[in-house]
Length: 543
Image (cartoon, rainbow, N blue to C red; front, top):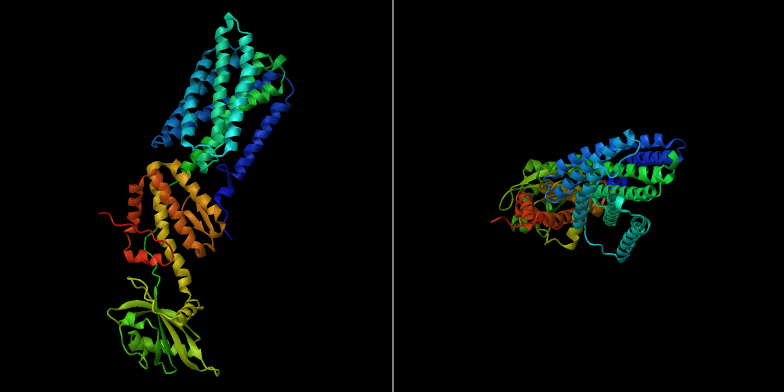
């Protein structure tokens, strides 16, 4: 059975249990705000003491995130703006909370408004820089939905907030009126920008981070837009009593905005913690024989016939009626051991042999099956010698019948090693390329780019559940028991995807250098050997 992928275990970068507990806490919090009955002052104090730690935690986490991001040319400007914006709003929120708890009437405008208004500027920078990283919307329905939402936001702002303010404006309230106009415009703009980000499907944990950030900006905009309406009409905890617009629409949305930012930075920091260079194991490859020689013997151990490619391997020579030791170029003791086993065992276990026949000696593996008469006596043996030829397979001269015998022998109970040898060869060959590309992206471009590559590989694996491939941070990939049967398709496809991604982020020259650093560990015969089963990653050596 294929393993469950991380994308199905996690939701928006959070483990299911983390997400469920978060949703439960949000539901309890909103219910308390909705159902509370009594003096509004107690609810205001409670919400203030919930909000203040959130503000402090968000700012501290933002500094930590920027420290991780400052080496990334692509993203450090975003996170510098995020850190500055949250710092300015932290000062504003603390100022407002202290004033609300210590004064009967909060002065408006106040110093807090300066920090809030200035804080919008770096946040606009955050949202705009993120949007510039996103591809353009392609589907018409997404464009229509986005622009419809943006137009409705601005219509609501103009009709229900700006128009009443302008109608009731007086010379004495000019400064306050300017602020009352600026806040809705700022929040409407941030809401529109956040909606654009939400219309892009999240890719990887970094994409999930931006879902939470966008939701945070949306909740913050809703809180301030609702506050503009309730404050202008005197509904904000009117008569010191709770109402849904005040406790949920204003305070609740504000608390949720900071909660979303905390979750987003938490997912981001978890990504930094888990995405480390993966270990690339030793580059020694298992040898998979590519040439097969058949030898047929009689009951006395004399050679009756050999396969048609025998002369290509050992040179032209007479073989009929010769001793097995002479035909295969092995010692008489080894030949006698093989023939003795053939008389007593139906299947000859594969064993290593060294042949001195031909132009040069070679290591190989010998196995076979015994031929029995109806009376149960041995009538000879069909033997198979397998070996690796660095210049390529010498099986081209085999007849159809001989190929069928080879297939039978290599799939028999004791000689089916090739069934496991080929997948092991492909795994040992392709994984170093895949891991080195991932490591270089991580080290050169940072965790954000590595997370994007990880997400693309995970998406590819999810599209092919039959591959039995699971992404996991420590080794990059893991495989189910069914996976080896699909290595000829899965591993080349994953390396090709990683190569394309690396070329887009690192450049073609750097990518080829990484691939060459792995490729040059083996001579060309290894790549040709892999090419018998799957496309090799073979690059010309650097001049």
